[in-house]
Length: 428
Image (cartoon, rainbow, N blue to C red; front, top):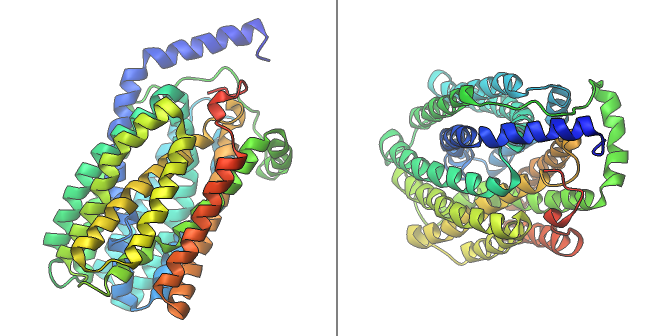
């Protein structure tokens, strides 16, 4: 197909369209990512939501279950998202549908605490988190594929770095506002709910920014295929790209190390009060570290590739987790969360962007879906297993288990996955 003159002309037109609209699309994706991540970080940061669920339930297992439900939803739907868009000339309209519904789930989490008593609010939050995960699984495929269409691979590092840098600054300010004014010294359901209302508003504004995107029509795309038939194509796809297969398995293993993430703040609560002020301080440390580190991660990625960022972030994550076991008090805990925040941002950015660099563009949605599904399945089992380990054996045992998964995933990538940018078959 690549040797066909008509295809080559269509591909050149496609690349010219991308270059002509690069500045506009870069700015649009920057604004979308900044506002969207600011809101979602309030929900996904390992501080507010775990502390809220613990406040409602009093149970470590309940915290693990809440995060497991979200990750399970994210594991179930990426292939559905890929099947919805891989035959479409433009994928942004589908992105608005799933993204809008996802943001309504955040609003549902917020309103549950305002309108329902604690026991019913906990059940409602479980429901909304599961729905949020289902929609997030689809959105992750759709918006990552959209970014791959409008932002060349050589510019993605600086986009994600700058986007997350700006999101970190605004997230830190919003976290400080939420922790200090909404929660205060005696956090309650109303304070947590208003924090998540703010998250809903910010993420909605970010989604609306995408109206100004100029999306190119690719020269080729797959014919519409029933979902079950497309699932049957996956084994052949994996056999044809062994490097990608080894990568997504390693990524899944490392993602299982995320099991400890919601329990970091609960462990810290044994040596400091989980007041609104302390939650704000730790969240600011977590988000600002990700903010500053994103510029560094982005620069490394553009020069040396996302594979190196993936490995370095795992090393930092392991070291920070081990340091947490020996830390106490708000100051040392905040320093540890600096390392964790930088590591999590590097891992998330590199894991997502590495997926975009394997194979041919036409199969990109399903590759994103495979990598996201397997990773989130591991991420779903992780918090649930983490809750069991924390309840039965204590937090240190949980942290060491998490470190083991991170190390195995990192070693697999280091030894078995070559830098994809060196492959002559890479199309993006």
